[in-house]
Length: 116
Image (tube, rainbow, N blue to C red; front, side):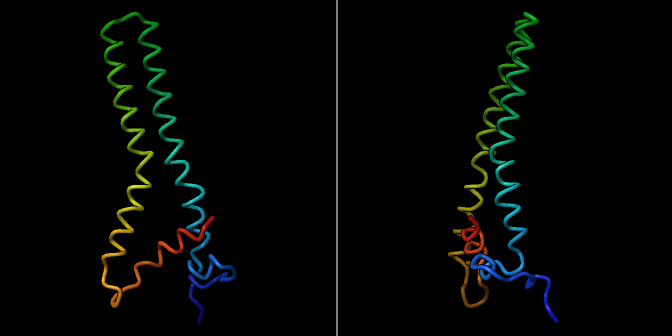
């Protein structure tokens, strides 16, 4: 009986990832760039639009409110941009500190790094 995770084992990256290569590839090449680059750009653009509307309205209170919101969104954008790096670093630290006799924790890192 074959496992779902063994389907399609062919290439070098597949040997490290098993049948999960398509899922890992989708996450690494599809979702991560959208989260890491797309969301910060959207946050900055929306903040700029809000600030532009407040400036056009010539309302001093609205301009100050829009400036503070733009600063908050810029901070959120930077945090979201670096979240992938931070999570990968933390997972590497956890994998290196785990007991190797009980579990193979380095497999996810080898799989992730093999996807180009």
